[in-house]
Length: 287
Image 1 (cartoon, rainbow, N blue to C red):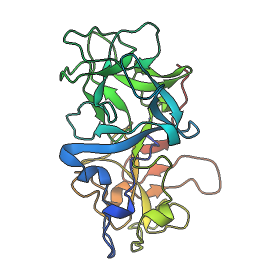
Image 2: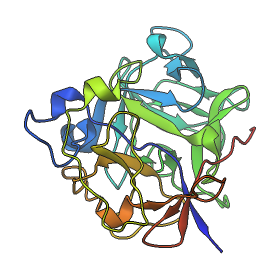
Image 3: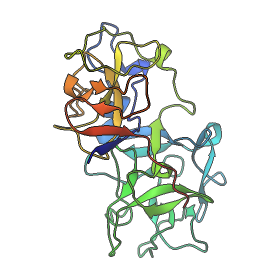
Image 4: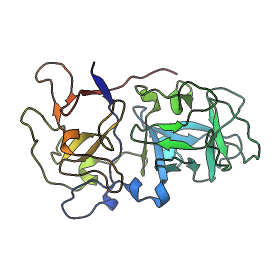
């Protein structure tokens, strides 16, 4: 049985963080953030017509709902990118995202600090930082999920999910594209051609395999994301074909992770040449 890799773009570097010479790897702005945090970033929903996380009114105060809004009007956040996770900080108010009780289901709201907060599985608000690992500590990894560790007997971990009524908490599922969020420094995505310096082109190691390139950039390849070997449900990245991964990230982007077997002139599987994993686009699950 063929396993699948979720098709999710991990992150791209910005011009300000790359050297002027011929690069050997893309250096993510995130890896250079203070103490493992991406400061001043927008949190953008994938495939949702330029929607990002914001607040329903400014300035944010107790009970203000966190909503999906046009990215030009969205909030900026401090997002944890270290393996242990951390709090997601609303930069303007300096409150953190917290799971808590509210008057309506399926909403994410904000509130003032409380020494004894009450929690509910599907609501979020801003709260003073307490370090509670079951309500405030999120992880953002290569699958592009904002994930809260499992607690209170739920079958799955919980992720921030773009439901029919906006963002809320929902069980994490690898193929659910409602849960895919990209963090970036600008309201709009940056142009790959203008934003990333040109690198050198390289050849595949086996003639029956192929690189997958963005249009017009044969120096950049689609790569499976992995620390040692690729695993099912992990994301994919764009990296230099001659590169060795993101600086300081610990990710391996050797050729065995970026050479693919293509189906030819007929519809078929796009299979990673080094093992039995295939690309999968995921599914939109209505929640």
